[in-house]
Amino acid sequence: SQKIEQNSEALNIQEGKTATLTCNYTNYSPAYLQWYRQDPGRGPVFLLLIRENEKEKRKERLKVTFDTTLKQSLFHITASQPADSATYLCALVGGSYIPTFGRGTSLIVHP
Amino acid sequence: DAGVIQSPRHEVTEMGQEVTLRCKPISGHNSLFWYRQTMMRGLELLIYFNNNVPIDDSGMPEDRFSAKMPNASFSTLKIQPSEPRDSAVYFCASSPVGARASGEKLFFGSGTQLSVL
Image (cartoon, rainbow over all chains, first blue to last red; front, top):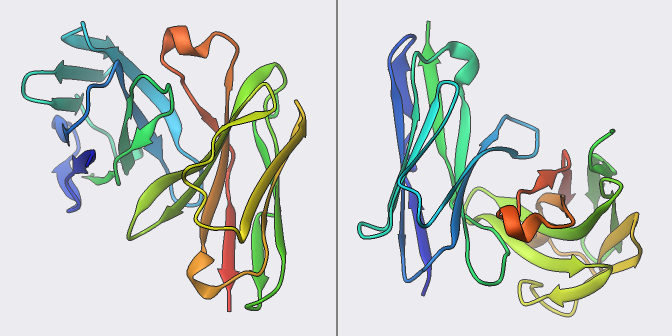
């Protein structure tokens, strides 16, 4: 069956460091991979999208990589700030065009 | 734009009661999704509408759940009768026309926190 895996343990880092979050998947051939941010008590907010034929995408302090051979996406936040603390969800979009979400990884940036 | 609007924000009910959750998508969006989020299972798709027509309802748990989209600006998710295991946060999300070409970016509401006692 299709599976999307994100680290269930919270990632704790110091302000100013680069945070790297991982999204692995199996039994899936996504056309796109998306990353969302979710704050407590709120709905997810779209951050970035990367297509299957793209290796890397950047937006300000965010960078996403997509390796369809490894079936893995890495999400980087450079120069992290306490305001970046949130849960980050990856979502895969295949032929049905319905995003399927991972369970998310909590990021905590310490001042 | 006000974004996707969901009501109520919180709902506490007793087992066996009917629950109705409401969603107003962003104007001009033609796709609407209902997701359910729990700690154990994360975000799960319940049903997907396109142009007010249900396209994929394979995620609807059982006959106790039903969803409607009578027009482009309103959708409901009904649970009857409710059970304690239905306790979760229910999210509505919409996406614009042509979203498929750009990867179906979703805009989420703030969710309804449902507690069934």
